[in-house]
Length: 460
Image (cartoon, rainbow, N blue to C red; front, side):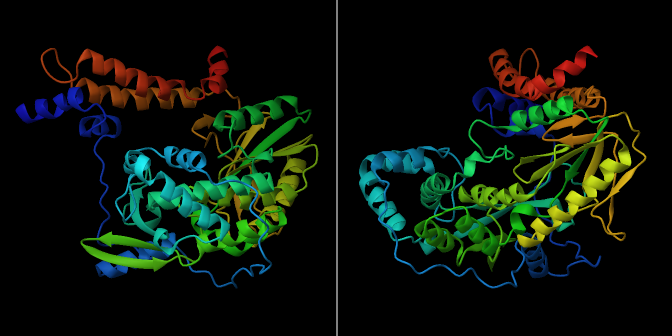
């Protein structure tokens, strides 16, 4: 009991420390098991086999040819790499964010800025003008994190890879992003709501509801499509080719190619280190990775949709809405669009997962006893309709009552409250001031998330 009270009292000294993490998430196992399951169902027998299984899952090999970079001379760089711009790139990162293999954090760079600011600015200016990304900043420390809700931790797909990259390289990535967005108009694509200034999950959900309400079709269905290992599998060659088509300068193409070339990750298990060279994918944990993914997703803008269809994108989430006077007409249209979506995925070395994709009726009241082919071929797998679908953190249902979402919020908040309550007493544990901070910083954001979307359902 004394140990428990001491642990609970940590709230008053370090609000966001171990006590808070336990109260928020409960007991969790973060350690990767030494033995995992191969794709054929067999188990790995050595630590080396486990490490290579994880690396093969997260970082597949690329069999296609490399991108042929143009060797034409660079145009004079029109922008200025000055201290103000570099300082903004450094201050954009959280000071306490986990560093890369060099151990340098953004907080250290902030403290050292009065001394190193001029030297860093000169270094980044040379990198940009010469279109070269330093090799020393391309090696990532790989951290493997279990995905929420996954219980079988022997399955390598139950984990998510996070690349801890050198902070100075991430600041340079920010400068590259600025040039890329300005040259290509990347943030002007209406369908994409992820990683776009001024847009969010709320704008994506609002667009969906407004389109359904405005549709004159008697039936409206929505297909939620899942891309298998989206960020980890996208091909570099088609991304660079798409960048060129969008009007990126030769300098931006070359520095992006330099950024992707000779990238490595290091995975440490049981004091053993394993290194893998990357051949495809957008590094999760980098600054430039989400932007490169946005470039790949712009290819979906070439998909021609008629007035009875719409598409909403948020990062790697694709939601296809299709309406018609009769259900079977809508199903046929969905299958036609699926063919075009699969052609886009093949171009970027991606694949869809029909078993994880979902189908939901948003208008017409059709009961979920139907399915749609993942394409127009007779042997294509089928997507089966669901009673509810969780999309961008909100549980949607055909009536848009959001009752299941509200129930989920209640259960999730109840578990958190129970854990917090058992760490509080009149004479020990969390104090009132800390309880107020937890309430405002955790409870309110969790309960009110997307409230403007689901709140109208409370009046039904």
